[in-house]
Image 1 (cartoon, rainbow, N blue to C red):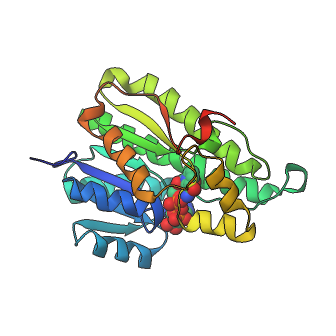
Image 2: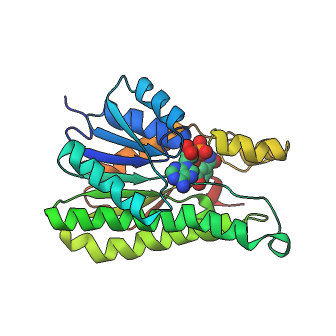
Length: 252
Ligand SMILES: NC(=O)c1ccc[n+]([C@@H]2O[C@H](COP(=O)([O-])OP(=O)(O)OC[C@H]3O[C@@H](n4cnc5c(N)ncnc54)[C@H](O)[C@@H]3O)[C@@H](O)[C@H]2O)c1
């Protein structure tokens, strides 16, 4: 039996840890040729090691127009094509009420989470159109892209932006055979969650409690959803923002 992503060339951003690392490792195990990108080179090396050397790595800042475009060029130069992408890099930013928040934090968070996804996705679509590739793209949004939450205005805005970018692009390129979807993780045990809950000790318990399953998720559980969305098994799925959240968004 072949893997779900057998022979596919896939770019994964934010792959030095957490969800991106789990995705790079899983996609490689499912047969993909993976280029793993991140700002953190040491973390990328660990990811490549965990994937048994089946993942190649590159340092890049997704918020830079040139570096985002170069990621796609590198994917093609290493693998001959780009068939899929998981635009996942993100930051949480500062925790502050809107009236106390800063423009610097807003621009930084939107710059990575939203502009970064836009820049990577645009470069990926351009390359797929040029090559006539029927590809698939998955963007990491969040349940924070589907509902509001207090004290993270920039993060919430950026993730709603990712959902909007995903839906708009899916409508533009469906007829070309390029499927574009978003995953919307609930609370997932990664460095990001540790940083957030470390500052607010009761937050982890509150987050677990607010899911129907009464636990936080594992990075691999998001990677599995992204893998399915990238694969041909999701061949009629485009334009969705799929919650993978233990039921958190289902109701209060
Ligand atoms: N952990 C959660 O609970 C949760 C919930 C919803 C959504 N998400 C989203 O999932 C994605 C992955 O987050 P995670 O939880 O794995 O956190 P993480 O901090 O473990 O991973 C994020 C990765 O993105 C990289 N990164 C940050 N800025 C970058 C940039 N400008 N260019 C390239 N790489 C950059 C970081 O170095 C890091 O390796 C993010 O988009 C995050 O917003 C996470």
